[in-house]
Length: 178
Image (cartoon, rainbow, N blue to C red; front, top):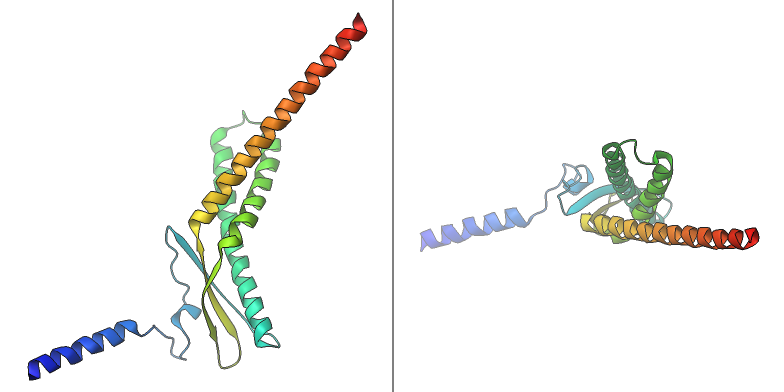
């Protein structure tokens, strides 16, 4: 009986220990000072704000966290584009392609950030609001793929328009020469 009671006490202690979130010495959640490590599937950011009202503080903290996710996403997309250009070599019309790809980068990040989710909020005793946000990496990949396909369709359309215009001008010039 004593042995069973001891096992139950130890099991409960372990469960309570596992269920208790990690905190900082001041009692704030651990994530306020140590952003959770991002995984292949999810990126995390933490931000805080202290404004004149709790609502403004929350809004500002969430905005700052989304900005951080945006900077992370933009850096990743830009790095992918730079790598693509470097691997493609000088045979590409580098200047035109750079402009197009920069636009692709901006559009991708703007579309992709729609998936940012507030995971946790914490209001400190001094009324500073902290937020932990997560972002599914697949959203960025999907947004990039969608924008790349849209860009490809646009260039195909422009190519068709240019070909049609050339054919029309050729026909017009041929009729003038006759």
